Length: 131
Image (tube, rainbow, N blue to C red; front, side, top):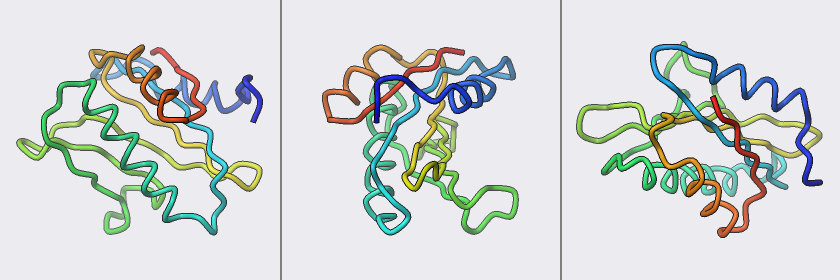
């Protein structure tokens, strides 16, 4: 995928970060995973969530997925702290042009630049979105 991000996807990601109860930043991760590679997408989601949690000083976290919750999307996941079930990150997996883009958002207090740097170091194609 080219360095430029699809403007519609960027606008949608930025809209998720609009002022609410907490200030958020985000990252769009572009993958080459197709719908036939959902296990690889799941592994990447876990790895990216761990990187975000590490730069958010969140402590131990787990992933909550929406498969058992009617108010939560099937391709939507949250990273929550083990102690207290506090929000660390949330993501939505979007199938676009036969591959997935994953939009993560997290509290703005996390080290946004370090998250982007580490994700790129791990080989991910990412675009940061500041709220």
